[in-house]
Image (cartoon, rainbow, N blue to C red; front, top):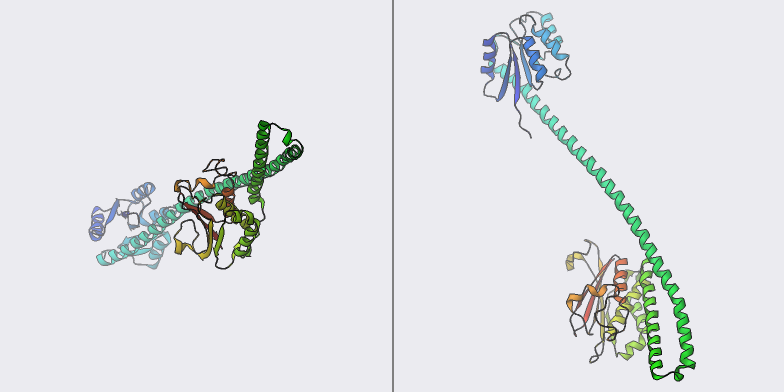
Length: 407
């Protein structure tokens, strides 16, 4: 609390009375201001209204205490300052009534009792202190309220700007998704024509081509196939945004069995085995999550080692932030942790973020086929589930993907 001085205005036309009052009230930390007349008191009060109490003699020349008190009470800033009249004349009820009517709060009869005077002054100065403390608290509260109001206005403006930005971002994303989707479909039409005429040439004219011509034609067929794969992957990437987010309690084993069926030829060719250790069902978007698991499986099969049969381990369990200590996990919310491990060629740990980028490749196209979109789709599907994914790898020792989906 701010420290302040308690000031007392002493009004008396006799110097010795003013000195006597200061002697009686000394040692209490008061600051005394002297006025030798009623006019002198009014002049002081016009300049400074911050007094805890006024001790005023009644019988003064020219302007007595009653008149002075009445003029003081006419001021809005001074009418609440308590006035104690000091008088040697208190011989009638009319005289007493006149004092209270003029604005006094109390009387003291001369000669003054030191103890009584100190006690009465202490009461009023303590009231003044409490009033000042309350006033300061109100001022502090008003200041804080003003700051909060200003901050709320700024927050409201920021929130409005964020809403506009979010709406604009949503609109642009929708336009981008629509553009990707439509463009991919439009690209398929000329591609189908290329494939149709290429198949006609392959069936009717291929053997008539020179060796160099057949080589160039084979390159056309290869480029056409890659173009088809790229368009299909772009469509899959765009559909992860527009797919309905309909969550269902799903048995992961069913999704994995479907993947085994659809990829059976590649699995057999790689002599691959898929081992699962799943604990209960999980709440996911089945269509998207099936695509996620298929992309991870395809990615693992593509990067299988030539000297070792491919082994894929898929495990799931329910966990939480307290158990794993991962900052990305929300507190007090259960997560399904799915680990997808393979024993393929792996990757250098420094590339664990790069592999999720669109069109990002760690190997040349001559070494391994692919469009560089598969893992980007995986990450996008995980984010559409409000989850996150991490990857670990070591060259020639396989890779493991950790997926965390809130339940």
